[in-house]
Length: 251
Image 1 (cartoon, rainbow, N blue to C red):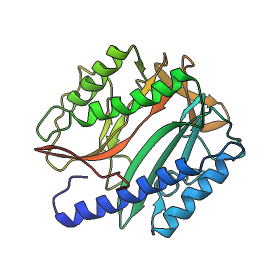
Image 2 (cartoon, one colour):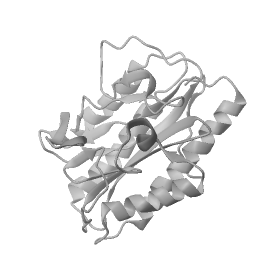
Image 3 (cartoon, rainbow, N blue to C red):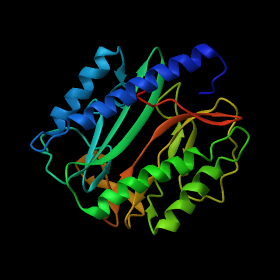
């Protein structure tokens, strides 16, 4: 999507805020002993209350309202009977549609007290996302986003999952431009046009380099290869001459 009218922007901000409120409420509700299905049901109720529909369900017939990935899972985890425990690393990814406009956001959390390395990874995963957001500016190369995130990751001694990319969003869940690298990519020649709507979502890891399917009988859930803790933080942004407008904020 490219924003050309104030009405489009207001619709995008509305669904962005709904996604953010849902993500934050789910994170606040997490408790040891809860199943990921119970957590997903909280998200489903909130989206329904706001008149929004789950984007993964609408777009891909995903078997859940939100994506909830735990520990070794890094993306597209299916809500189900898995029980959450103290110290688990949990990623909550919420994308939804209302009035024909889509938005997408996500964040990773340590449930209660956890491994200090993973706690620090969460802290720095958020910083990596903001490094990418701060590189957003209409007219600038799209490669600036991956370069900024890559510089941050390298300085901290982290790796980046290099086959899970950012993407356009707005008219659909996965819109043009497709496959925006959140790592340095010398082949990227596109530029950020004014009003362009897309996600910034690096997958920062303690050694992981690629994603792969968790099992042969699960077409959705992804894990890190090599196996390593990994976090994802994601916002939907609009490129403007003054920088990024972040629309997936709860307040």
